[in-house]
Amino acid sequence: METYQVLFTGENGVGKTTLLMTYEQKKFPEEYIPSVFDNFLKQFQIKNQNFQIIFWDKGMDEEFHDKLTPLFFVEKDIIVICFAIDYYYSFENIESFWIPYIEKHGPNSKRILIGTKMDLRNNEKKIKKLKKRNEKLITKEEGIELANKIKAIKYFECSSLNQKGIETIFNEIALICFGKDRKEKEKKKGCILN
Ligand SMILES: Nc1nc2c(ncn2[C@@H]2O[C@H](COP(=O)(O)OP(=O)(O)O)[C@@H](O)[C@H]2O)c(=O)[nH]1
Ligand SMILES: [Mg+2]
Image 1: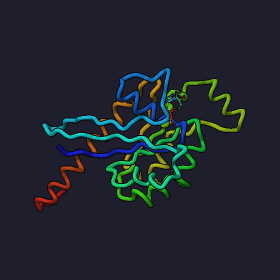
Image 2 (image 1 turned 180 degrees about the vertical axis):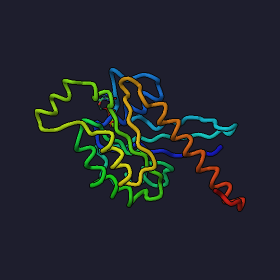
Image 3 (image 1 turned 90 degrees about the horizontal axis):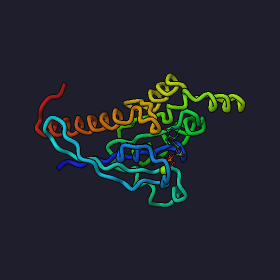
Image 4 (image 1 turned 90 degrees about the vertical axis):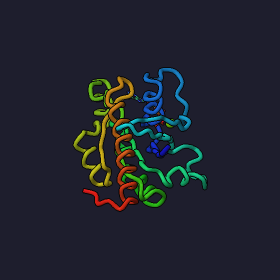
């Protein structure tokens, strides 16, 4: 069976581990969130074809500067870069840190950009708090603009807290993997693709 590899990355605290746990367990983890979620494998079926995807979770953890970290980035079919909409640094750092890093270690992976914690758009307390610090939430338009800049093929916003947009993201990831497989197989058969 065909196996694809998908990495979730981005700054600490943006909600990568929570996102993966919410998808896998179908509920928001209220109590314990480990710093990384062990990679997990999920089966998919599209048009009667079965395939599997391994999901990886790698952020800016204590071991990030170890020699082995690049291995998380090499040969991934998709690299999903996450920022939190209330955390400007996590957004800004995508262009200045994550993209150069990915260009170096996983330049051929397809890229997806995700703005997490979308529920905060309705959180007046949070918005007021940011305002006091002369900050504001990252808008959807800013997200789309960054996605174009970094050549991401998709931009999504989601909330693990209220489970909005989560299924869509993973369904889309599965479709991209499936499409990739078909294109490569057809290429091998010598078909002309449109
Ligand atoms: N409001 C809100 N908080 C979230 C959401 N997802 C995660 N968090 C919180 O953000 C914090 C960091 O999450 P975590 O998954 O550990 O981030 P990671 O470092 O990127 O893996 C935790 O306190 C989570 O409860 C979300 O969708 N909405
Ligand atoms: Mg984590």
